[in-house]
Every structure is written in structure tokens, then in C-alpha cells.
Amino acid sequence: MTRSVKKSRKAAPGADATRQPAPVRQRQRLIDASITALHLYGPSGTTVARVVAIARLSPGIVRFYFRSKAAMLVASLQFLATEFEDRVMTPVAGLRGRPALALQRLVELYLDPDIASPRKVAVWYAFWGEASARQEYLAICGQKDANFAALVRDLIERMIEVSGRRHLDGEAVALGLIGVLEMLWQGFAFQDESAIDRALARRRCMAYLRSVFPREFGAADGEAGERGVPRRTQGDAEQERERCFRDAWQFVGHELEVPGSGDCVTLDLAGTRALVLRDAQGGLRAFRNACRSQPHALVTERHGRLTDGIACLLHGLSYGLDGRARHPAGGAGLLELEVHRSRGLIFVRPPASAGARPSPDIVECADAGDRRPAPGADPQARPVEADWKIVVMQLLESRMPDASNGAWAIRWRSPVLDIDPAAGTIRWNATGERAGSAPQSWRRQFLWPNVFVEQRAGVLSVLQVQPSGAGRSRVQLFEYAAAAADPQARADEDVLRTVMRGQLERELALAASIQQGVTDPGYQPDENAPPSPVVAAFRRMLYAAEA
Image (tube, rainbow, N blue to C red):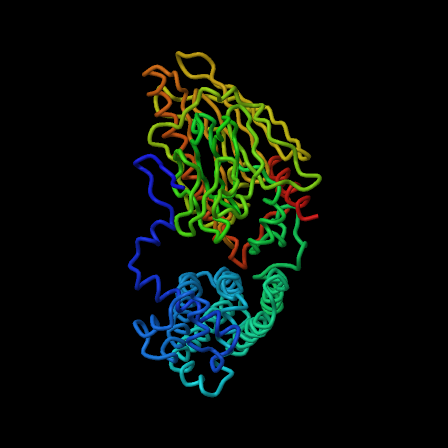
């Protein structure tokens, strides 16, 4: 079964992989199989026969890529060493100027399941544990280990300088952190992934750092003042997704973006990729945009048309518009998401647990059913060097929108505010005046935990803040215009969108500045200055999510 799409669409990742030169793919398959064999049998028990059996290749193919079994095993270790350098040391080293954040990121990446899987960790220790393999290990990884130790020592010494705790022995503190990380890795090597509590492992590492630098790494879990962000929501993206985003409705697109059977939109959300489409009967369906054999994206473009179902060219799998697997391959169908429509806007979430918040109703916005994506306004994920909660709070506190250039100057009255913590919503409703025109309306609605829907003067926008790691987030902006607007109205909308984008950029820059200021150990907030009602409401929602 094949899938046809619009000419502007790119092929899925699997399709790209099939076009790679066969030698590249086969060599990587042998390396992956070698890592699995090393995990199962150790260096001495790993044979060419076992490797090619796992890789599902013929024994003779090994000679085309490696001189011997030993060369193949060493190439596997070199692959892991390069991966560790690229995915752990390089991003952490880039944060040297912010040592607290760098150490937090180090813990997060060092214990990441892609790096510290039982399969990969077992290879490191298998090489180190067998006398015949130690020389190869030292030749490949000796410098890597030395560089890692030097990086940790440098970060600890910077922390000592920042904290003023100059009585500490930087080398001893660094050795202690490396020891904690190494002991946790050793535990991973002898467990199944299902038995590993990575959140607990991260907490233990952070507890060690907190015991040495209590002020810089915060109070114990749960200790925070009314003006602070709860510590349990800082730096643990996996736990945060579970608590705050597990049952949360997330915006995906507008109904007019999927007008007919087979039309689809995709979007990367917190913890999953979403695929929304019209099925053969014209109903809206939502699925996890992931192949059931391996979790790569099946559809990679934002918009598309699936005229003949959904295909995975990499694994030869095919799914209907109802998500069911097709024969002859058969197998499991796509994982379905809940879908909800309000005022023409589409929201999705995983199947909700008991007690989840109700479906969102965009009551403050007029019916958005006649909207279309604004010209040249395809949604883009804007990276922000700030925790998603800081970004949300900054957007909650942002001033009334003001178009102050000439004829667009608008004087807004204070909005009517409606806060509903149980539903997880905050609503604003205001009116404003512009010289020579009718009164303008401004409506805005926040949906827990990260969605802002805003409408004024014919412009509808949706802003979605997604966590991307400790101290980092990405902001997705969607803009929609009235489908039947006249030329003058469209020109006015273009001006207003430009003003709104400029204000957004200023707010995001301020959020990044606040994030950087969080690492200043000498800063003390004025506890007598109460937070705004909307920020206080958001914090109460955050505390409730922790309970």
C-alpha cells in the first residue's frame, strides 16, 4: 500500500533511510547488532555468527566493513564514545558560563535513556571488565574519560567561585559527583529498562549537588514560597510531562486545515507527536504520529493529504485512515488520541485518566469557523532559553496589547478577569478605542498548562509553550485570518500581526533574562510584593498538579 501526498511534501524518515547507500545502512546495522550482542554475551562471547543473526545479514557481509571481529567490536565502542561526546559533553560544555544549569543538564543527559540504556551501559562495562578488552577501551575512551572528568571539575570549580564556598575542594566534590553517576550506571547495567527509576536516579544526583551547594540548587522537594516555582517542577522534564501534561489538552490546528477525507496536520507536542486527519466518513481522528515498529514519525510535514492511507516505507507497514493496520502485514494499529473541537479549533490529548480536566471551551472568543491560516504564518517552534513555567508566567503578566503606530493606536480599558482553577482556565475580556473607528474588542483565554488563545480586530492567534529540557522551552505560534476579509481588513490584520509578533519577541526575551537571573545566588526577591492574580492562579494550578 502506498501513500500519495501533495507535491510539496517530503518523504517520511523511513523513506529517506531507504535511499541511503546500502553500505552505510548495513555497517550501522552491524554496529547496532554488535552492541546488542556485547550486552547479551560480553566481548569474549560475542561472535560474528551471533552479530549477523541479530542484524539479519549474511556472515560474509562482515568482511566488507571490518577486518575482523575485534575491529567490529571496537567500532561499536567508538560509536558509543562519539555519541557520548556529541550528546552529553558538547551541550554541557556550551553552558560553562552558567555552571548550575550546566550541572543540572549534565545529570539529565548522563542519565537519559538514549545514552544510559542497559544495553549501551553494559557495553562500556563489558569492555572494561575483561582483561583482553581493556587496552582497546583505554585507547578509545581514555581521553574521553579524562575530558569528562576535566569538564565536571571545571563546572564544580566555577560553582565554588559563584557560591563563595572557597573552602571546598573542587577535585573532591567533582570526584564525588562522578562516583554517584558511575554507581547509578552500574545499577542500570544489571536491570531491565522497566525496572529503572530514572526520576529517582536524577533526584539522588541533585541531592548530592544540593548537599554541597544548598543555596544554588534550591530547597528540598516541595519547599517553595508563594512567589517561587515549586522545586519539584524544576529540571525533571520526564516527571513534569507526567504531572502537568499527561491529561492536558494541546492545540493542533484549525478545522479548515483538514477540510476533506485524507487531509491531515501534524504537530510535535510535549511527550508525543500528533497526527490529526479526516477519516473516510469525514470525521476527525487523532493518533500518535509514530510507527508501531519503531517510533519514528510517519508523516513529517505540517500539512498533507493521505489519499491511500498511512504508510511506513521503512518497515513495510500500512494503516488506514481509521488507524487500523492493514493486511498482509497486519499487526497493531496506531495509538489513538482523544480529539476535541471548540470554536473551530482542534485539541488533542492522550486517553485521559479519571478526574482529568474537562474539554476546553473557548468561550471568550467568537466563532473561529471561518478562519484560515494567515498567509506566510506557518507555525514555527521558537526556542527560548527559559523554563516553560517562566515563559507562561511572563506571558500571563504581559501588558495589554498596544498598537501604538499612528492610526493603530488603541487605548484599552482594564479587562474583566475570570479565573477558574478547577477548569484550569483564565479569561480576559476588554474593549478599546481607536481614533475614527468602532470600539475594538480583545479576548484572551489561558488553558492549563500552556495554551493561550487570543482574538482581537479580526486576528486570531494561538500560543503554545512546550518544555524542551531543563531551563529550555519552545513556543509554537499559530495565526489565523478571516477567510472573507476585504483587502483593507487584510492589510489591517497584517499590521496588527506584526505588532503582536514584536510584543511576543519582547516577552520571550524577558523570560530568557529572568531564567538567567535565577542562577544569581545573591538575588533576593521582595517577598512583600505580591504576585499578580493571574500568576498566583497559575502557581496554585501548578501546586495542585504536584499533589
